[in-house]
Length: 296
Image: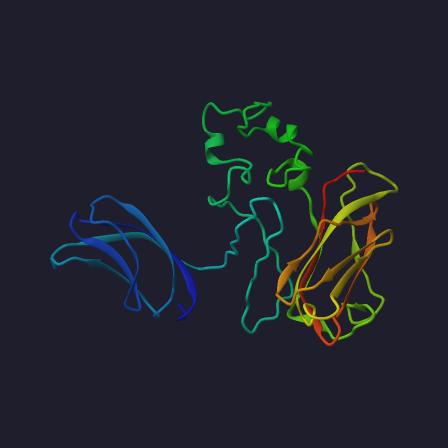
């Protein structure tokens, strides 16, 4: 165990009816149970203040005893975030010290803090007497309800459905210190000024050989000078469309708007460019492109 690292500890504990089981690290109590003879699960997140974990009892009577079983210690590696209640984009940060990340994937994991609208199937939906197949019409989750909800979330972004839950991130990347430019008056390609593109392949659910599919550009960055002079600009360009965003604030923020970028349904190339405000700069920490509601 390394001092200063974040960990999660879990253990089953019980006393002899009067002693309180406690777990101590570096002189600080990081988890404790109740003074009961029944087995109980205790767990807690903590920052290590010492190099050892002590399993002990807290009691004024020295001849009392406590027991511990199933003790696990895990360094925290979960990335947690609170989804926006209206289904809008949420920005999060993952920090690494003295590491340059080559690849990073984040996957959804069960989380009881999600709302009922954000959880497709809860534990209570799988108990005896609940529908598995067929459309219930009552809001209880079943395969039929999921199929019935196909495409129903077009206008209500806080309701999950099958179509929405299969949308993908078409491109996403970032830079540990940010990609920046002082260039004003013309756009600068974020890939080093070259005429370089990102290749993307959107879902083509209808198997079209032509036409376009709507996508959502999204970036996180900051500016200097955009709030007092000319705005900073960001531009996405595909073979069939372009998306341009004017930034007039110097506060670090997640950038996107209601406009969409159309891309070829059979696959496309997307160029990302940015432009600094007059006498200022713009820096992009991460950039991405997401599939929008599927409609052709």
